[in-house]
Length: 209
Image (cartoon, rainbow, N blue to C red; front, side, top):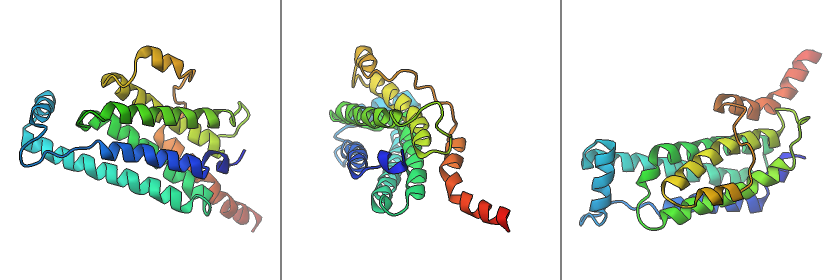
């Protein structure tokens, strides 16, 4: 299987829609502090002032903007540069992981549960499709192997965040039927693997010279 199996236009659109759902459920406190009670609780839990919390929300929004730009970049080059797409995919999933682990409590309003549930469910579908293309003989530099290991990292964070906000129950998590999603590769290794094929032609030319 090639990388195109993973990154069909439908897959890219699904991933982009999921990320946009997070954007939609992000609410900044307005002049009347519409979410003052919730914000006060978050600030207290984090042990910071509300002014400091506002700064963290701004940084959170910047992370979401970066994530959306990465996904948009994937959509732009999906049919032009498969190797670059894989790298952007790895970076986007790890940025989503960072957001969910560090800032899951900053999603305000009633839509956060649905957003986390949808992004997790959509990622489960993508994960299972890619898993069918990977076998014990699949080389580590293969795009599907890299994507599968990357999604293991992402899914663990999605599920943990979903359980925290009661987006789904333990029974629903079991129903995902994912098997063991313990990652075998680190972020650094996956980024390296996602760029290996890019350098192969150069190394081959050097070896032949």
